[in-house]
Amino acid sequence: MTKSKGRWILAALITAFLLAFAAWPVRVLILESEKSRPLILTVEQRETITLQYVHSVYHVLQREIYEPVGNELVLRSMYFGDMSAALYYDAYALYPLEPEPAGGYTIREPNLHFPAISFALGHGTQYEIYIGAKRPIDLDKTFEDATFLTVRPDVMPWGEYFLRRLSNGNR
Image 1 (cartoon, helix red, strand yellow):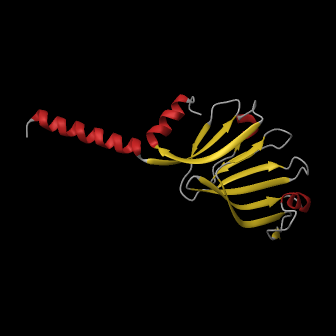
Image 2: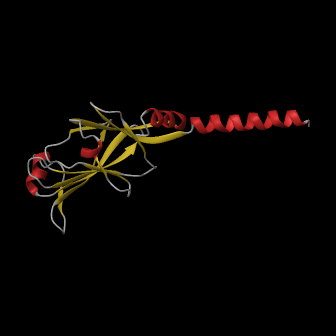
Image 3: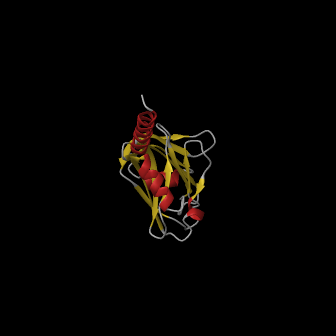
């Protein structure tokens, strides 16, 4: 094998590797508001998304746990700081409420599917989002000028993820 042929083969292998890597799928969570660029975060397989906030009417802690499945978020459980907040969302008692030892109530495995979730920021709600066991992201500070936020899962090629993160100012 000549030296130039060896370099050509090496260059072709490196190019094929880079193209395959750029096409490799990556699971992401996209957080979009009406006033800023989207925040794109990676999510590992079977990693949960926890949305935690203070209920705007009853002023108690509330927590929703989702699992990204394909291009949907599946609601796996909801925690309510008190019975009033729980009944506000489940007035017809469609799902059994389980009392928690430290207080509050949980609905386990409602398994509701959503293509995205949207909610209003502000009003003293103190929204935080956790991806797996990672530290929380304060959504009120991250999207301080926003009124509404939409959270949706997606699967995109790694190359697209990299370029979108780069064009969003690494957001």
